[in-house]
Amino acid sequence: EQIVNVTHGDSVTLTAPSIQGYVLDDRVEPTNSVTLNNVTESQNYIFNYTRKFNVTVNHVNADTNAILSSESKTVYEGDSFATPWKNMTDQNYFLCRNDDPTVTVDKNGQRSINNVDQNKTITFKYKKISLDELRNFMRQKELAWLNDYRQQNGVAPMQFNDIVQQAADIRAKELQVSFSHYRPDGGTFQDLLESLGCYGAKGENISQT
Image (tube, rainbow, N blue to C red; front, top):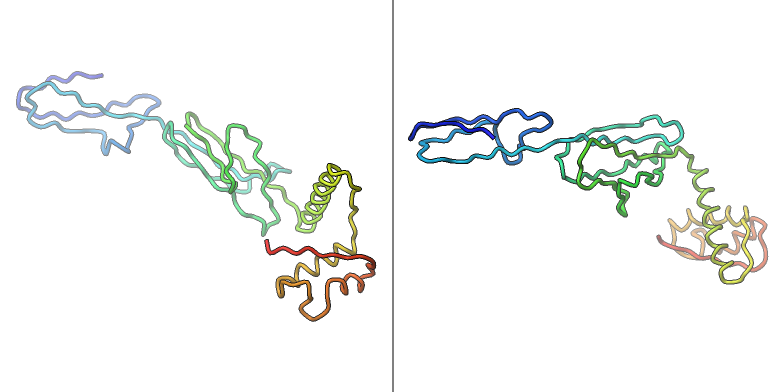
């Protein structure tokens, strides 16, 4: 607080003092000084201060901790900050789950901090994995989920079959041409399985997801 004596009717220019650790809040203070004209009574003028913090966003290789990219944003104290992840699947990098309890994640993978009160770092970790490795991982996961469900319902587990998987890979591409149990060039999925050496009872579930 400062007190400035002014002669009746005069003007006075007030300059905001520097306060360590704080800056003028430029959202409400366009400049660091203000002129009061024709002062005829006691007046109060309030300069609004705030603090600013840096939020650093790092995109990191989970295996090597190498920083793939980094950027920094300035945030006002008390504000919230949100940032999206980067799609780097063209480089075979796939996003890992968030392991920082102070950072929240929405359904789109965007990460945010509420009520920023200090310098903060948000780290997105990515696993470098080939598409073949990813496909194999997902196949094994899906088989595990399916067998968990089967076990809960008292039926025997299913086993992975390379021939069936080979047929599924072919059919996945064919479904992009014709969404049908009949193949684009004629025949059915049963014919495909038999041509690959798989005989017996067969079924096919397809999805447009």
